[in-house]
Length: 175
Ligand SMILES: CC(C)(COP(=O)(O)OP(=O)(O)OC[C@H]1O[C@@H](n2cnc3c(N)ncnc32)[C@H](O)[C@@H]1OP(=O)(O)O)[C@@H](O)C(=O)NCCC(=O)NCCS
Image (cartoon, rainbow, N blue to C red; front, side, top):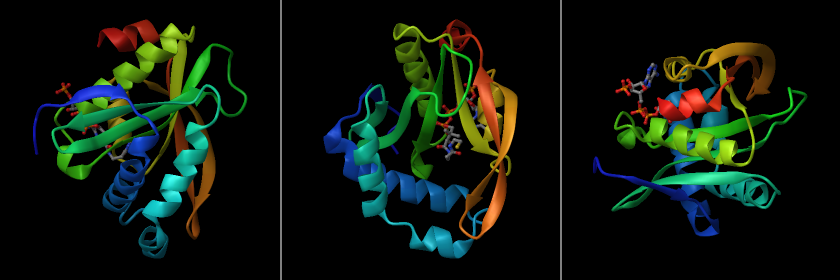
């Protein structure tokens, strides 16, 4: 995997690769956490369509990480879903292809999203993460703190999820 990447806003041409990356990364990350049948049944086409609809929503934005082979990861964020304090936006998704993890792209995408949110006037940012996902350590490492918990139904079972909050976007951007 090429260690060099750049960040740019994603657009509709990226949607097929967004679908591919999402399915590949879910199967890699959630094996043993989410039931096998659900993971096996995920479809790149369905995920592409889901993000096609989401990309069309006012205020929703995407950042892409690309190398010479094309898209290798993305972040997706926008207005907070649910009732949260004003001035806080939500990071809906952050997925880096398994082969491209660990080269700084996740951090760069979070910082790019945070910068855009701050430019839109937001003060904070949060993301829901499954409690069983060891990658929540990544958000903790970047300074987010657990601010809420809830239960989500995925596949054939309930899973606890945790909202990680960065209260001060300026601090995140400076990391
Ligand atoms: C979690 C994820 C976004 C991290 O992105 P990444 O590109 O692999 O991570 P980076 O290379 O940017 O790491 C940046 C820093 O975070 C640290 N870090 C990365 N993953 C970590 C983890 N799981 N726990 C603790 N720290 C972590 C790195 O050591 C690195 O530290 P450094 O800056 O001091 O060198 C990525 O691995 C991924 O997409 N995973 C699968 C999907 C997922 O879990 N998404 C997010 C939660 S839903």
